[in-house]
Length: 398
Ligand SMILES: Cc1cc2nc3c(=O)[nH]c(=O)nc-3n(C[C@H](O)[C@H](O)[C@H](O)COP(=O)(O)O)c2cc1C
Image 1: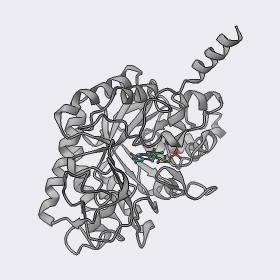
Image 2 (image 1 turned 45 degrees about the vertical axis):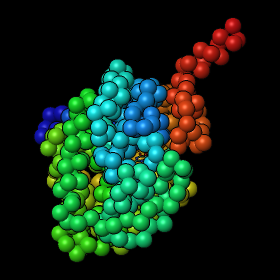
Image 3 (image 1 turned 135 degrees about the horizontal axis):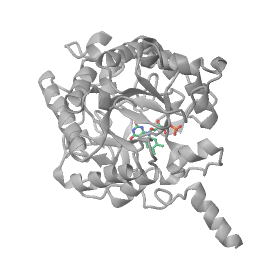
C-alpha cells in the first residue's frame, strides 16, 4: 500500500476488487481483513442463532453453549453470539439468552473464554424483543413497542409457542430507561470478556419496530420521517459506543425482511438513511440480512443477494452479508466488493469447522432443523469436524 487511497477501507476494497488484472489474488473468504479494531484472518462469520439452550430458571448460559461457540471459533475468525436480551422485559423466547443479572456472568465468561481459546473474536448480539413477546416472558409486564399496531405473531413461553400478548406504546419518558438497559448489558458483555457487541436492529424486534413505518406511527421525536424514526437506533448505538468505542460495535439490519410482521412504505429510502447514520458513527460493521431470508428459513428460493449491494454506497466500513449463502456465492459477493465478510447460520449449525470446509471444498453436513429451537447437546454441540469424521472412518477401516 503506497498511497493514501489504498489505506482507506474504500480504497482497499477497490484494490481488492480490481486486483486480478494486476496479477494479484482477488479478495475471497480467506483474504485477511480488518473489522473495526480487529484484524481477522478470514471472512467466514458465525451468524447469531438463538438456540434456546440456557439453564432455567435465570437464563444461565450452559456449558454446552460454551462448547458450541468454542467449536465454531477459529484463529482470527469472528463469531456473533445469539440474540441476548438486555432486561427481563426485553425477553421473547423461553430458554433464549439474556444478560441482565450477575448470576449469568460466569456462564458468559465461559463462552467468551471458549472463543478466545481458539483465537477467535466474539461479539454479543444485544436484543430487545419489543412487541414480539408475551407477559409470561416479561415478568408480567405488557410488551412494549413504539406504537400499538396489531401483531399476529408468536412468542415462546414455558408452555410452548403462543400468540404474542397485546402490546402498548412506550411513553416518551420511558425510552431513556431502555437505552440505559442497552448500555448496562453492553457493559456486562465487556465485563464478561467479549470483544464487542452487535445491536440487533433486524428481524422486527424493538429497534427495527422504531425504524420502519409499518410499526412506528408515533408523532413525537421518535416517529414520523425517517430522520426521527432512527432516533431510537441512534441512542441505542450511542449507548453501546459509550461502553465499547465505535470500532467494537456492529449493527444488524434486515431491509425488506418479513420476520416479526414488519414493513416499511419505502425500504430503500429508510435503509439507505440507516446505513448513512451508522456510517457517521464509524461503527465496526454493518450486518445485512438478505430479504430472501425470513428469520430461520429461506423465503424466496433462488433470489440473488441484493441488500448489501444496495447499502454499499452508503456505508464505508465493513459490511457482513448474511442469508442464504454457500461457499461459492459468499466468495462471489466478497470478490465483487458488495460485502467484506459473510455470516453463515444454518450451515454453521451443523459444521463447526465451516471455514475449513469452505476453504478446502469439503462436503457440508446437512443441518437439523428439529434441533434449532431448544433441546440437548444432540445435533447442537455434537457435530464432528471433517477431520474428526475422517479419523472415525479411518479407524473403522483399520
Ligand atoms: C435457529 C436460528 C436462530 C436464529 N436466531 C437469530 C438471532 O438470535 N439473531 C439474529 O439476528 N438472527 C437469528 N437467526 C437468523 C440467522 O442469523 C441468519 O440470518 C439466517 O439463518 C440466514 O442465514 P443462513 O442462510 O446462513 O442460515 C436465526 C436463525 C436460525 C436458523
